Length: 202
Length: 202
DNA sequence: GTCTATAGCCCGATAGAC
DNA sequence: GTCTATCGGGCTATAGAC
Image 1 (cartoon, helix red, strand yellow):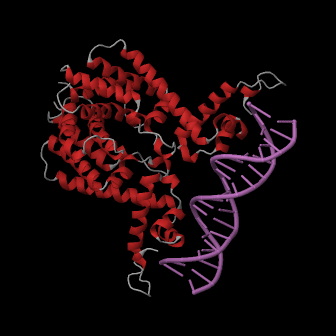
Image 2: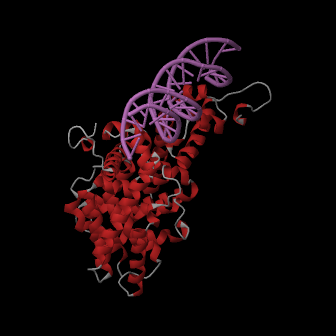
């Protein structure tokens, strides 16, 4: 049983918000570790110590746990990205802020990055659109569009440049999460950011 | 019922190899469309017209269908890559051959590329290693290593350069398969190859 | 070798007491 | 709101006739 449900000894004081968080936390870990479809509700019950009934009461379905998780992660990411952008002026700085944020998150919260960016959400969250159509990625495309207009980025299709840049930045994250980068991402981040910029700069 | 099983009218002439191929073909399509875990054996039976018994006789398990498929695709890709490499001399040409092969395959056989490169195999094929540790990707790293040695590629970590290059090349494929590239890949391939090379050239 | 039928299991989701 | 117990269903894999 989850100790969150028994803060004193007899009376159960239950904070539903804490319970929601707890379910999300355990489900998140399991989803990343085993993949959504290999995590059953009983597995989450066992891991979190929270009962089936409570889970269905708070989320309604297993799919909805995943959906909530995804939205939280994406919202939080977008928020951080916008905060960092406020201190940037050039195209290079703005794109760099994107890359640095992702690389820092990959170190601090690898599960969060993996779930948000690399799971195949369309296979388990109905009606979801691909990751690259979300707000942060639209914003990167806008930044590059403006970069082309002001001569920072090479002339051409802005979409192509954006896809190149995000590809060059995100691939190292993927390999890092697969634990196969021979050196830690923190050490090589500068090189990756340089390379990605070299690919599209004017 | 599958017409392969009934080439004449009464007697069933059954070519086990043709049957294997047929199962692989239908399973492949379904895996890509719905994701491995949402495809059941009964679904494959219904789609292919081949019975449960035959499927288990020929493959032993659902996982083994996926494994066979993956190995076939990867072997065929490696073969094509090596063939094309024989006509290349410079680093640029060799890396270009990799990119062109993938872009051509993406047009000719999108399901093949999606299954081979973008499904999360670790979630359903036991003991499999990440895609980027397979022969073709090792070969790309070797090409880049030699490219650095001969001064074609910028000095630095060869692994970093390889990850940058494959990231910049593969990301457009992924977006194309998600049907969200605004223009067909054939039209923009040159730009992507240019960008990826610009990222790592000396 | 191939078929049909089904065993045996575990799943997601719900019911109903508290 | 939260619990335990359980339902109905669909799954992988096998058994046994042909």
